[in-house]
Every structure is written in C-alpha cells, then in structure tokens.
Length: 120
Image (cartoon, rainbow, N blue to C red; front, side, top):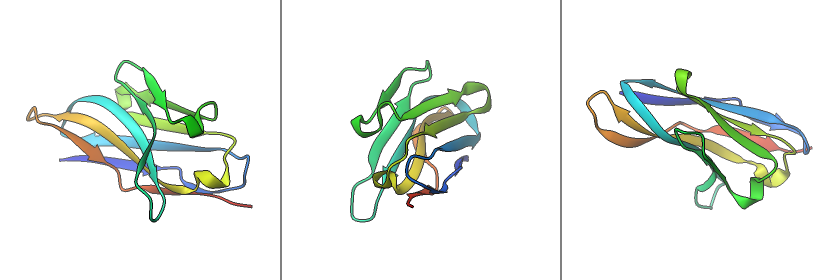
C-alpha cells in the first residue's frame, strides 16, 4: 500500500506565497519522477511542475519564474514553492509520483489534493 499526502494549501492574497508538501509512504522500493498538477472545475488536470529522481525539473510556462519544485529523496517528499501568486493559480493541487513498490510493481500514485485559493 502506498499513500501520497499533500499539505500546505490555503487562502492567500495576490502576490503572496505558499509552500506545498507531499509525502509518500508505504511499501516503497524506489521513487522516480514526482510532480504537481492542478485542476479547476470544468477543466482538465494540468501539469504544473515535475522533477526527476536526479533533480531535473520541468515547469508549465504559466508558472516559470514563480514556482519552484524540489524533492527530499531521504524523506520521500516533494515540495512546490509558489511565489507571486495570481488569482488564476487558484485550483486544487495534486501531487503524483511514479513509485516502484516492494513487490517491484511500478505504478503512478496520486495524492488527495489540496485547495489553493488566491484572492483579495
């Protein structure tokens, strides 16, 4: 059994900052790519940022220069530092990870989501 648990969402004013965290736990052998996605009602879930096990990063154009993804491989955690937040960043944010379990099965796992609201 593998779980991803996000934290750090909330309400913030435009121009403010938030830091999201996502911890993976359970029967984990290794973790590959990790990422953050977001979704607003009526729209498809979109990639915000991803990071490989070696630290290579990728960002959506809409967040480049404002968001930073990082990971702590020792603690199976991925972070998303969000600065200069805009109202259009309002969404439910989900983390995901490509995880090889102790049974050596590889699957993509998702967290339950955390709400980020940017509003004055």
